[in-house]
Length: 176
Image (cartoon, rainbow, N blue to C red; front, top):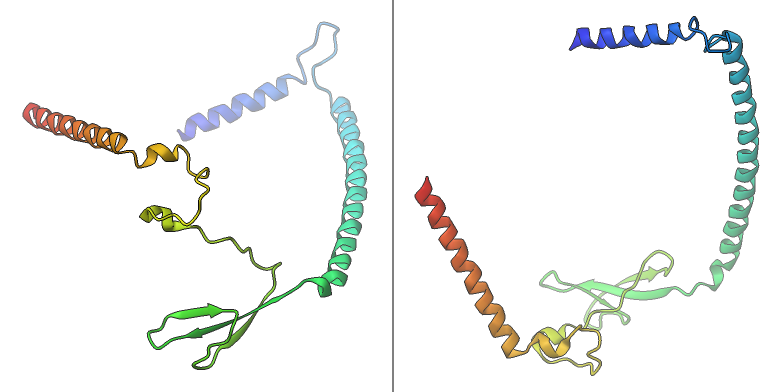
C-alpha cells in the first residue's frame, strides 16, 4: 500500500510537470509561471474585494446587534417576572406553588420568562377514558381508537403474526 501511494504521488507530480512542457494547438504550453502568477494576483484581488465587503457587512451586523442589545437592556424593566415558592416535604418530595408553604419554610424563586419555556400540561385523563375536555378533534379518528371491532381485529392480527413467527422459528431450527 505504501508503494502504491508513492507511485500515485509520482504520477501526479509528473503529470503536473508535463503541463509546463506539453503544448496546446496554438503552440503555447498549458501552464506557465507567468500565467500562474497572473491568476494568483487576480484571485488575491478578488479575495481582498470580498473580504472588504464581508468586513463591511460584519460591521453593519455588529452595529445592528449592539442596537438590539441596548434596546433589550432598556426594555428589561418592562419584563414581568414571576415569583414561585418551593419546599421539600418530609418524604423528600419537592413542591412548587405560587403561595408559600403554610406549614413551614419555603424558598423564594424568581422566574424570568426570557430564561425558560413554559408549556401547558397535557390532559392525560383521556388515557383513563375520562376526558375532561369536550374537544376530541385533537385525536385523529377518535371514534375508531377504542372501537371494539377494531381492537378485536388488532389482537387477531397480532396472534397471526405470533403464529407465523413461531412457525418460522421451528422451520429454521429443523434445517439446522
